[in-house]
Length: 373
Image 1: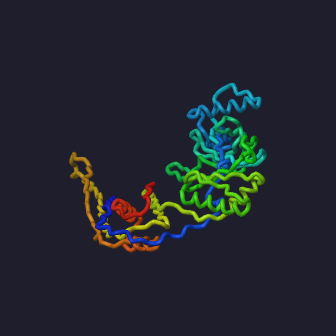
Image 2: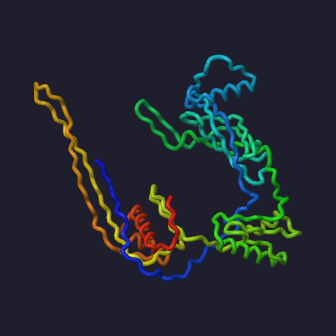
C-alpha cells in the first residue's frame, strides 16, 4: 500500500492591521556568554595518519593504494624492510585527523582529536591511532596525536542482513593530542581588546559599549569602549591596567541582549523554532489536507489444465481520495504564548503549521524573518 499525502497550501483569507503591543523585555546575560575575544579564537589543525589494530574492518589495500604506501613508509622509518609481495591484511586504515587548537594553549597541554576514515574501512572500532602530526594553515606542526579510538556506532553483519547504528567510520580520541608549539601571537602584547558578538545586533553592541563605559568611568575615570558595527566592540586598555585583569572585570558585566525576531523552519525534520519577539497580525486562515491512497492488489492468473498457457500476473490498482474538511480560524499573535495557542487550536501537525507560517509571511502579516533550513 502506498499512501501519498498532498498538502494543500495554506490560504490566507484576510489580514487586518497589526495590533501594537509593548516590546518584550530583553534577557540579561554576561558579556562572556554573548561575546568572544577576537584574539582568543580557536585555530583548526589537520593531519594524515594510520589506525592499526582493526579486526578485519580496515582498508582493502587494493582499493586504497595510499594506505599501503603509508604503511610501507612508516615501516621503513622504523627500520623495517618492506620489499616483497603485497599485503592482504585489513587491520589498518588511513584516516584524517582534525582538532581545534584552543586560544592561549601552551606546550604540554592536551586537546581532543577527531579521526575519520579516508579509505574503504567499514569500522574503526578497536583501532589505535599511531603518532600523527597536526599542522595549521601556515604549514607548521602545532600538535602530535596518538591513542586509542572511541567509536559510538556499531555494525553487525550476517549472510543476509546487516545492522548498523551510528557512524562506525568516525571516532574520537579524548585528550589524544599534545600541544608542541604555541601560537605566535601574544595576548599581553595587544594594545586593546576587540569583543565579537556571537549574534550580531546593533542594539546589543551599543548596550555592551554603554555598560563597559559606565564601569570604566567609575573605575578608571574615562570611557574605553566603542562599538564598531553590529558585531565588534573595541575596548582600549587604560595605561595603568593589566590586560588580563581588565578582561576578567569586563566579561562578568551583565547586558540586556536583543535579537531580531525570527522563525526558523526545517521542513525535512518538521522542526519549528519561534522567537520570543515574533508577532503576527490578525489573519483568517483556512487549511485543508488531501490524502490519496493507492492500493496495489495484483492477481495471479493460472492457465487451464493441460494447456500451453503461461502463468501471468494481472495488475489491479485501487485509488481512493479523501479530503478532510478544512475550517477557517482567526490567528493572532501579540505574544509568543498566544501565537502558539492559536496555531495549536487549528489542530494541525508540524507540516501544516509550516505551510501556514509561509502563507502568513507571504501575506505580510508575519512580523519576523522566516528562515528556511
